[in-house]
Image 1 (cartoon, rainbow, N blue to C red):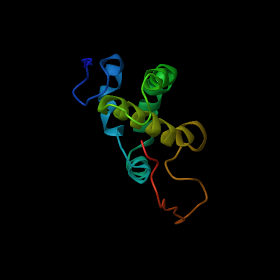
Image 2 (cartoon, rainbow, N blue to C red):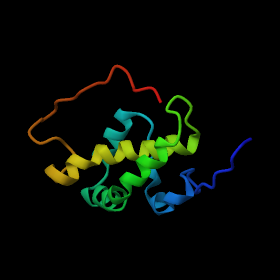
Image 3 (tube, rainbow, N blue to C red):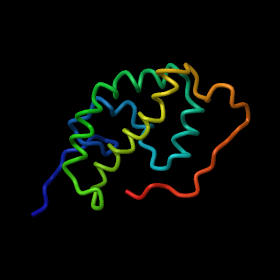
Length: 116
């Protein structure tokens, strides 16, 4: 039996429709999330954080209902939103800038992405 899940235009579960204006943060790869963080303003990061952070416990509870090895697309998108929230947390909470302070041109390259 297939269960129908109501989703928003971007494919998020409808319970999280308030995140729809921030669908640009549905980003699969960590490096892409990092680059997006560098490309947006602090105001944009703060706006996303202010809406998403209070929802974090319910977002995680929603994702926990599913087998990590068999996530439907709407759950993966919600997880990518969680990952993006993690990506903006330090800039918003600590640094007040997208880049890590005092790192100059230093970069870090991932060799592998987590599998979900």
